[in-house]
Amino acid sequence: MASWQASWSGARRWWVEDTPRPVRWTVYICLPLGLLLLIAGVYGDSQQWWEGYSFATNLVSSLTSLLFGVPTALIVLSHLSLAQAEAANRRAVQKRARLSARAFHEAVMGGLFGDTELEAERLISDALDGNRDLGRHIPDSGNTEQELTSDELHSCRAKASERDRLMAQVLRSSGGDLSAWLNSIVLRWTSLERDLRPRLEEIGLPWLEPHVDREVRAAVRAIEERNTGRPFRKLADDFRWRQPLTWGSVRERCSEDIDTTKHLFRALRRVVLWLPTFDDLGT
Image 1: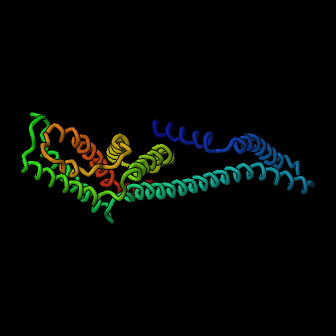
Image 2: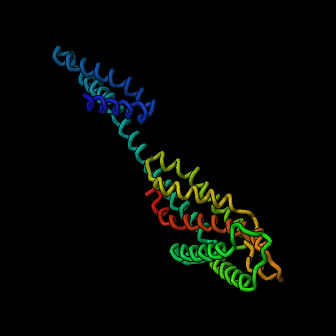
Image 3: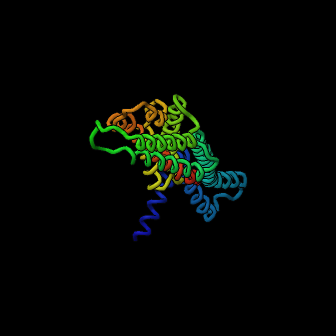
């Protein structure tokens, strides 16, 4: 019973939603008339109405065939046209998905050193390690007026120089160019999510896996929030002052940059990690 109801519901939806209104009205008019002429023709044969009226007989027969044939042909042609239009739309959306995914890939990789996602991810991880090592050398709390010894100053300067070197190996851009690059990543992702995703879902083509979508969306949001519009400072310069230099002044100058770098580079690494999955959009 349930199977019959599902079949009937599917057939009704096919007729009401997929068949054009003019075609439906043609069927409503032609089929009853064709059926009436068919009955009249069969009954007329039994009553010998058509003897001596060969032309009229052929005319009625042709008209009867026409009344059945026209709606049938219209139904077939309309659904063939619909199928072709759907196929063309599907191909167009798939092409747009490929182009949009490529544009997002180029926007991300265009600002990073590294010929492949794997290499770029490694460089970002190295920079994060250098940034973390510097952060560990700067206490989060303690006597802000305590001065750095010569050994502490030398150690922090070396860690900051290494951190700056590793970061320079990651980013191709700096200053305003860096901010523009980060904005381009945000804009490309917004275009994918707001424009492409609904079109893919509308025709049943796959979007990103849910966990990938969540990861990339969160990463892009972090990139947008951490895009300060100013270049990354070379923190090694903060340790070139003449002594005395206190831990309080070091924290004041470096902590914000270290924290921004940590969150921004983590977000970039997550985006780069999932870039290969964008090749499967719409396929």
